[in-house]
Length: 136
Image 1 (spheres, rainbow, N blue to C red):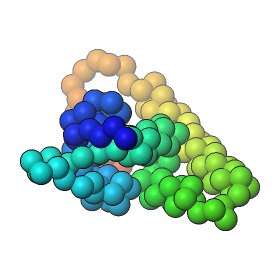
Image 2: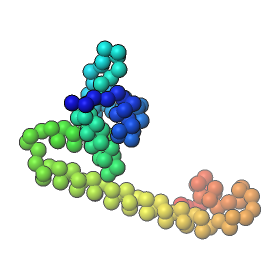
Image 3: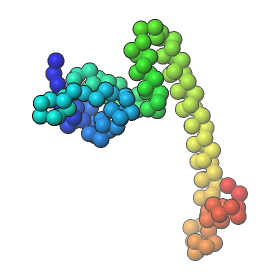
């Protein structure tokens, strides 16, 4: 079994050393044994786990959700249906965020459309809206 230092693990996974330490503190990866020199000694299993965490983050899962996914992954009673349910729940969350972002975009476009881009900021309708004098 190949082992590596925290720096090597960081390089292999494309995350920072501090991120790996953070994952250890959060319990997403176990604190590894140390060599006689005091350096942490990470296995290929940890590399795979960090890659899993990274991919799950790219899909929008929070660290809490990732922790739950990791637990499900290790539970022999977990079914594909359990995992599909988590994915569908994440889809619903993403769709909610998209709707929210679309509302924000619409409001910003409306605000930007009210401003000529000329004159002092004190007369800017964007500032007036943010101060509560105009409707968003």
